[in-house]
Length: 328
Picture 1 (spheres, rainbow, N blue to C red):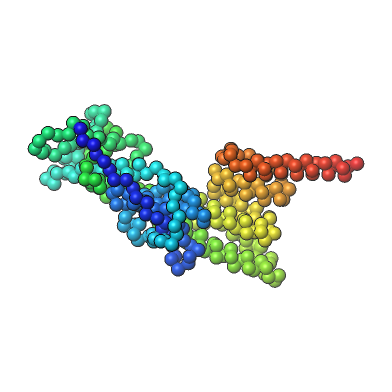
Picture 2 (picture 1 turned 45 degrees about the horizontal axis):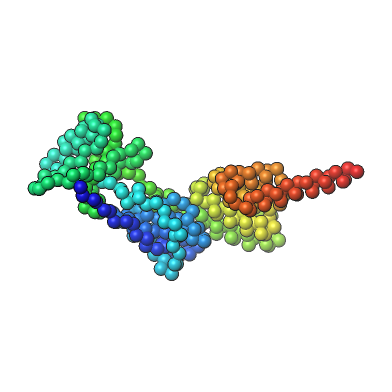
């Protein structure tokens, strides 16, 4: 029996992706690993260089075009994510040149009549290996490009576990899986964020001018209700807007932007916590307590959530006591 060893992924450092390299504030940073097949795995980071998203796969061509190295940033992951599903990425063998379609049909037919996926080995002199690991297809996995070869030089095959048909094989260009990381969508989202952040910055300056204050307040309300081009990735932007407005003594406007962040990321406990803080400052204690409870349901080990919940209870009790005193 031969043991086949695959080269592990290599951490290469911090890289940045940007729709506009001339504006440093538009950069998004990523941890990057080089995969055994030459592609790359990337993981988005926040401003503190902490991971905020799942690891995604990027082709070598797209990576070299869209990402730039940041050698001055020495951050590295505390815990290496599981990259085994990228490292064990299987590919199909090269079909014979004389009859490629017929070869694919025969192999697929054999796979549909058995409980395992056959591996066609080339004829060679000498004894064959006692065992060979075969990667079978699963329902939740996209079909792999056909045909290619793994970086280790070991050919494996994975098929859809569905009944074979007599229709011709699907061309490789049509059978290729959808990109795990849609660079075009990310680019558009970053362009939208860059424009909205600049609009917010300018409007905040207008807010400090007495003659423009009323128009600026209206513009901020409209900005909070923006829908065109907005994606869940913009939750951090709306959170930042809410924090800035709260710091500028605009709790009502801060509430609008923070509600938008929760709307974009209803599963984000930090978004619910930030919203609860603003609601509490506005005296909306019951709704604030509800959002703290939601945050606790997502992350029950955060001590700040318990402290805020206790603070809300104390404020409610004090308000009830004050109302009772006024009735006397």
